[in-house]
Picture 1: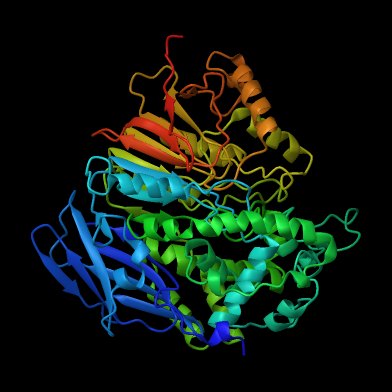
Picture 2: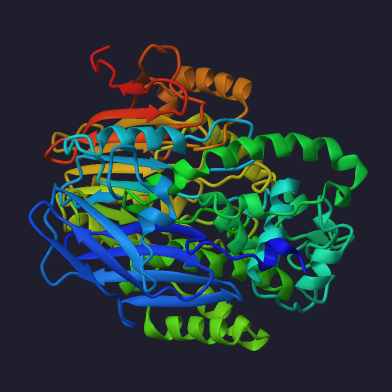
Length: 629
């Protein structure tokens, strides 16, 4: 047996990661090679105390012979103080402390990891789209620098980090990353699985096939379902990604991916074999290897920062697969095929464990947790299928956090407004019921921080192009996924912002698009206009094709300036969009660079400063334009 598989593993394979945090509760998440009974020590300015999580507050899910996911949901009898630095440490039953097991988890000059509880959000960070093999710097290193400089400065230390989608790329995986994933599967003994109606019988056969790397389109499912009789011909691929050569398939692959993008713990133990790569893909393999080497070097900083800032997440498509639930036709084809349904379900299972559960543990009902326990205790096919069915039926991935402004996170993937008559056209991002629930939330508060993975107020020229391609049946080709793409859903959403009882301050944060921008939005001919701001930051490690974006930016400024009559032909005709100007780049409105958004709010919840921070250059401010010009 491989020595790297039998040698002892660190107690923390991934994490610890600080998740949901209020004065009344704290969520910590980590993965260990065994069940880890741990005490959590807290160090406050005026007192210290220890909590021993019991079986009601510590949920443990076994995902392999040497892999256990832990979620500690701590509730405090005495609320934690706000706006004070609180240090913490984790101690195992053997007396090993986190700070000794992971010395790099502590910032220089500090004794332990720390956090700050906020009731009011004064400053926060947000970002999306982190692809390991993209040829760019990882903006998480810039965030690590920001946190390091604000550890003891309560005016600068952020309230939270909001990750707005594509925390991983399941459909766009580098060859070296997929080999690393399979090495992690072997080291941790992550669960195998069997398939129905697939080109392979089980995960063992999948991993052993010569077309496992760069040729997975030979394995991915095809169907004729949903095709017009005159277009049918041969069966067509269900997954629409242009980069699906290494699309993840198994639950084990998803779990390994999360470990590898958030933690450095296993990278020096991995065994990869370039000889298994088909000859014609050797060059791309070597190029991807260089990009991933740079990515891995920064992972200690990533692990450190995620232990110091409350982090909330929501999925977008690439966390599961490209164009996930984009159209009714896509859904019919995908969920009508057992193998495709399993692949999507595996992505959702991993999201549940690694992202969703930490956002709001109390949201998940007992029957769903029971289905999870049943599979992770007995990972047999019937339990696997039942758990996936329960996750696909679940409709509460959205959540709120009781802060000021209130954090309201939208699930725009599983509650879509489907088109019965035009199933090939994009569905609305929220259906009527979900929109009405959102309206009630926005009417019950004075200020809201609304998280919508795709921008609600997007770039009009790009939306126009997407609409044009959709008319000819090519919505999947241009990722035609915007809030204005479905007429009924769009008008219902815009009416929410026009309602006089809607929150007076609405800061919308988004990602998805691989460029960054900021808009101030106001209602035409209204004296009681609510404050609306659209702030988009994308991506953390991904970019839009540069020359194309420059052209689109210029055309959009000409065609859709606030005074342009073309605005009257858009669904947002009753609103005026004021584009903020990147400081020092007066001719640009759309910024194409890997970064993370930094937003500072005033006491009422309105933006004081909107900026992008980077790994290797100074922050870029988005400044409001003179409205009189």
